[in-house]
Image (tube, rainbow, N blue to C red; front, side):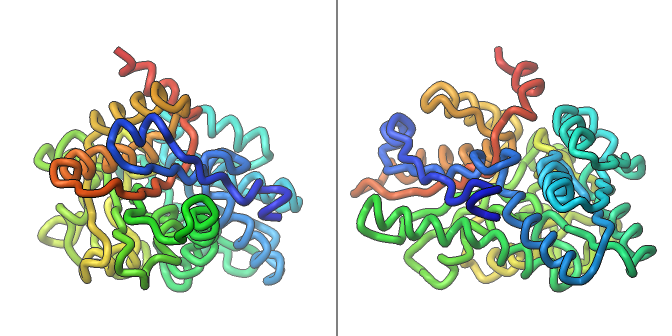
Length: 349
């Protein structure tokens, strides 16, 4: 199914003009070319097969940017299972094309109207549904968050990304190990997949890029490693943005997929032990990076992926001041930007 239906392996594309811009050998892992337009299908295929093995007939999911919802609706249509997707009311408005895709695929899309009406609230509603319908329902969670075994399970299903990176990079360059792997992090499923097979390779620097929103000090941000502290969110202990009395702080990002007040426990561990370096990018920096990629390489990235590209720009502006050799970098291009065109057009000037 990963090959014939999802379209794997996805290309590892050498971005020549972007490489010249930053004096580095930059490769894009083209998860945007997966069926449904993002990496999310890697996980939904695996979990759908698991649900079938367990005899579940009803599938639920949460979604922020809509990509996980579309991927879940897609596999449910393929196997003829009922599909219910919870999506924040605010996200339904800003990601309307994906709402239409889910409905066309036969899914019922239910708006989450509590709280900030975004991904956190959609996850809350999905967990409530799952708890109330344990006999016939499987919850296909979309990121490396939630109660055990979801964080580990989703990371394993997404690990195909780094497995392919190693194989493809060795074929192209003679070595399986880049100097850097860069990925955006909300909950962190694409980053978990891109990092997975490099975790024990200390010479490979892992760079996670969070959403700084309108700025770290504005109160409108989703940069959990800067603004968060340890706590419990959606059934797992991790880092999350919270008040002194433990109430979750509402996040903000121009990217619906990164608009989440925490990170997965794997990423909290990588941050705490220093294995991964966490950067952050503002809405404006992400937009600029997206337009740059479009103009240099003819690729329109999802707003989520644009944060990884903004991290690339920050990192190599600093590195190239002291660079002695041309570094090899893999950026996980987690999704395509069709769903974000309305937002891009609002800022094109």
